[in-house]
Length: 68
Image 1 (spheres, rainbow, N blue to C red):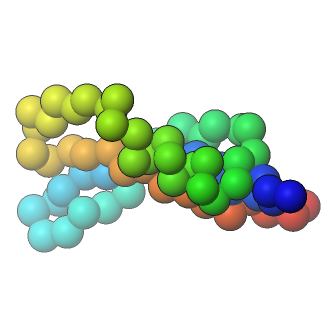
Image 2 (image 1 turned 90 degrees about the vertical axis):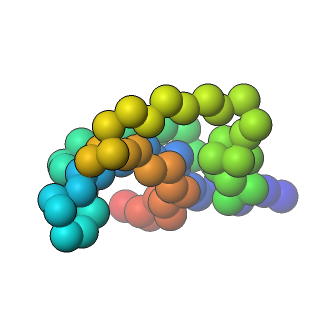
């Protein structure tokens, strides 16, 4: 049985000249996934990115879902 307790999260980060800081925006896929399923979304070879602004980036994460 695959336990589905992770959420796929995309966060936005900005570089302030010293460090990368979370800018306060995130997108969460509300469908619970197993860790393996979530990691497949992150590692999927179909992603293509264009990063033209060196001061902003997005980050993909698998976040354990709260049990509340």
